[in-house]
Length: 112
Image 1 (cartoon, rainbow, N blue to C red):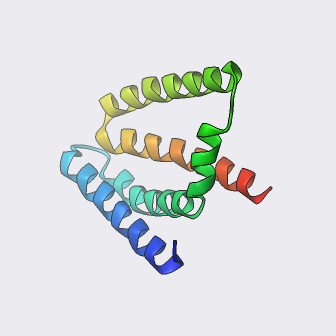
Image 2 (tube, one colour):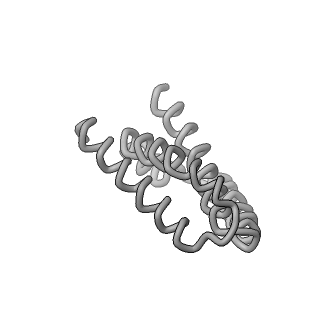
Image 3 (cartoon, rainbow, N blue to C red):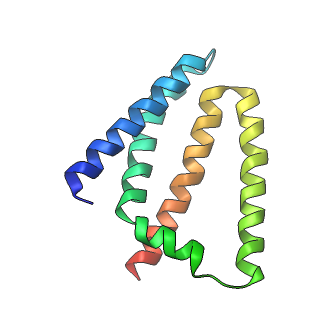
């Protein structure tokens, strides 16, 4: 994907997520300022390394990778649901941080 298109797409996703979280936010309005740069950077890294994301999910045979994915997904869902109960912006920020960590690892693996 061309860098300019990737950046424009990333800005759009960041704006959409921030606006949606702001619509449902009743508290933690200061946290909303962190959502835009968080989701812009996550989307840009995912789009930059999208081929590696697809190959990592398909090219890992065996139960250990599936167990690891199930544990990470289950803990992410559990923690995300508790954060969403606290406030919508904190839940969205927690999910974005989970994606940021995954995108960082995928980018590191892609560089190898």
